[in-house]
Image (cartoon, rainbow, N blue to C red):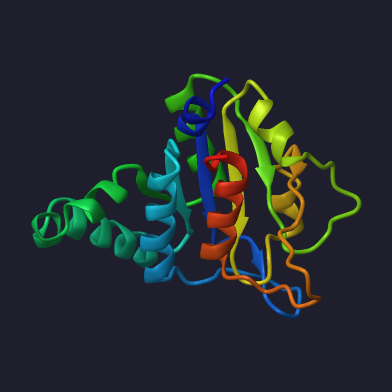
Length: 190
């Protein structure tokens, strides 16, 4: 399958719940304006089918919807058309199950659900970047916020991609950076 065609059948989920805090407790994190904008732009740049911001907090979902509306139908749409196009495939969902149901409706198929993690997860089934792209099923890429996805969320994935690491021990990328790097590893122009 051609890379662009695979990208069209790839869906990014930014999970705000259930995720971990620095103490390993399950929490819900806040949506950030930068994640709404920057990940939307990265998904548009790589031709990704959809980007879901997943949060159970109704006010946070309304915030995302207001930002999207401003840039697609409000004053922002006439001010910056490129920003409006970045939001073409961005939406919100209250939980993983709702986002997955929408993806299955879009694809009319069961996707391969793949998680990402900044830490190595030795007990999880793994998949390489190439295997994820070559798999014939639609692809769902889950990214966690906070200090990573809670085990119950990771267990919903069929496999985990390798952590993104640099040449030094420090490893604490923003999720915006991690999404961009992952999309480039999967779909970047070689």
